[in-house]
Length: 248
Length: 231
Image 1: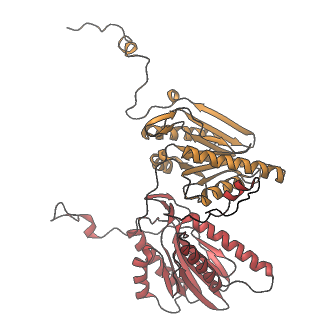
Image 2 (image 1 turned 45 degrees about the vertical axis):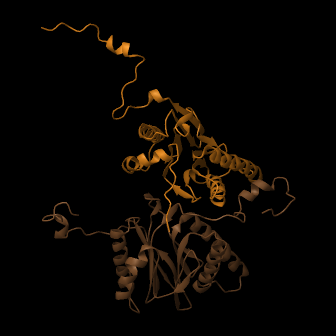
Image 3 (image 1 turned 60 degrees about the vertical axis):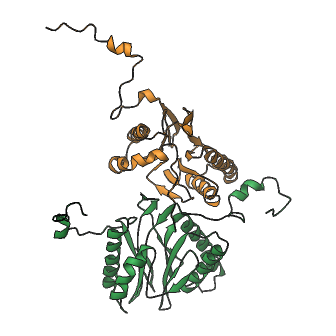
């Protein structure tokens, strides 16, 4: 599908640096992050993600920050293709830059950033060239807590607790049971850690190095990386096939 | 949704930072199917005086990407009035890899030294993710090195320790990966400049089930002289 007939000398290499031309599609991801889990608590939002990025079945990178602060009020967590997440951060950098350049005392809140991301993801989906990510967007502005999710096909919603990937199957049921309004910071962290521990046991692409991020009216803090203890001392684990040799 | 596993890529490439610079290393085998098209290739390619890139995957794709990046960096250096930083070089590589991800099959390791950040290594795997690391491994041979580096890598190595680690690692990968072989080439980049080293296949250590090479069987059977007589 030809676009222009006249090309300037020297412009072709530069076009390679820009976004792809019309008739292409992203077929499959290469370097991927796994679950992100988040919940609303008394003072704002808590979000957790491990620092792993897998390359197929290899746990290739183990120090990747999958949560980043956006502007003053929001935090973005991503699972899926890391190169697409890096591109999204680039788009958001530009968005926040223009927002600051207005210099009008207003700043984009989490609701606005979520809306922008939804538009980006949905429009890419319509061109059959999705950004292969599931995004979790949380934030607090003017006392209002906000927690939302956008998938790679543009499905978006808000809730009191959200998760991506395996987290949907393993963490959400725990959160549905144990989440309540006005969780304290400590209870919120413990609840997230409970979810992350289950994911560590049951998700092959999980890595035992995680960060927990907190967003309140004051701002965004992302914890240092740390690892969780795991429990293997069940008596049933000692000799599981006694009495049923050959089973597992 | 079927997550297709990544292609394995012929080659072993490594980039390691040390206290004062970086050491880049690679094997020298280029294969077309089962045939070794070039047994002494140079996979460590210059981008600027102070930044080099290790290439893996499709030879054509990695060559064209490094050619374009060299071209852009040349212009950038003229406009900037001083040497380009490793970060800028790595990001140009990322832009090409990311924006043409459907067409390219190449994994690259960008390494160099600049006056602002010192020695830096950036991995740019398939898909165009950019990731700064204290050390990076790539290519099909790297599968055999994850365990090795988990154990052997230490922060704050000297230049010689780092180079020895790289040579040992490439050599171990070559022992097990059919797509890697030939010689080990290393490039050391620091504030003083760039040093290229060459370790021919016969000067590398021998690993499990590998034997000392000889010119001929005749040298072996004749070596120790006639056998003493037994009763």
